[in-house]
Image 1: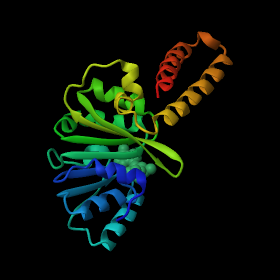
Image 2: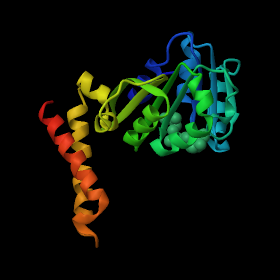
Image 3: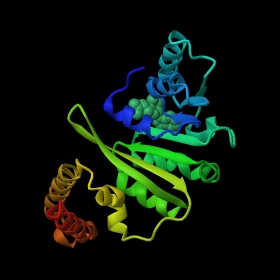
Length: 229
Ligand SMILES: C[S@@+](CC[C@H](N)C(=O)[O-])C[C@H]1O[C@@H](n2cnc3c(N)ncnc32)[C@H](O)[C@@H]1O
């Protein structure tokens, strides 16, 4: 099963021998790819909506992978029994939705070997949640698909290395690795922050708005780092 660049980069973080839950599987491409790979023991394809699961089921049937993938309907990690898997992938949703999925199941998540997360928005909020809730960020990368840049975050249970919170929010490991797409990605974030500042300036509170000062600090931080890339 050939994947696009985004899902292929996510799949590359699934270690040989893993037992994986793909939460929010939708079409089931990632789950099918992992099951067909041969070095992944067991895959759960979970989704909260029956429509996407029907599509995933059809794909899995057509590829003859029904004995390798358990297709389950349910909200977030409710489809996973304790210690059934050691790796959880959550991709293609917002960072806040991921936090809502992980929060009630933090105990289960702490027993995993690895979480592989690909938030569409809110990656900074998600990173901060992870480091404040007993997860260590072990890898991060950016990947471009059809003109859009996506972030992938790999976290494992354990204490993180203390770091400046702004650095964590914008991706300490992306910075340490000097990810090849980082400059372009941070420039996009900076442009977004500039647009937010402009609309705050026009609001009734103007530059007195509490978000204004916070965003200013973020912009200064990003500008400083972008200059070094
Ligand atoms: C945009 S798709 C992403 C599909 C795939 N993971 C990918 O990255 O290509 C998001 C999927 O997440 C599912 N979803 C949203 N909230 C969920 C939740 N709380 N638990 C499980 N699945 C959820 C949606 O039904 C949808 O199928």
